[in-house]
Amino acid sequence: MESVILIGLYVFVLSVFVGFEIISKVPRMLHTPLMSGTNAISGISLVGAVVAAGFSQELLTTVLGFFAVVCGTVNVVGGYLVTDRMLRMFKHK
Image (cartoon, rainbow, N blue to C red; front, side, top):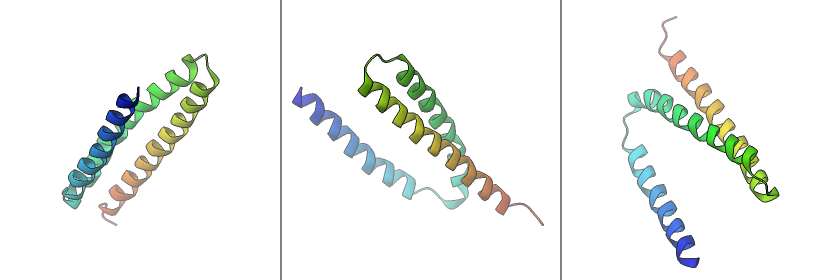
């Protein structure tokens, strides 16, 4: 059981470093299309969190699912607000 936790922690830390390196190398003009793509992925994970929160029989799983739903909702709404703001910057007055 400890090895599963250590492997999961290793994958998480590695994904944080790889994600940071990939995002830091993206030109500024591509951030808006990439934000739209990540909003779609966040929406998919939000659906998974809703299923996990509603399907479980244990209290801990329900609480963690609810927390995932809240975090996913904040991520999706914030992403769309940032995308809308960036798109408004390119409109002519």
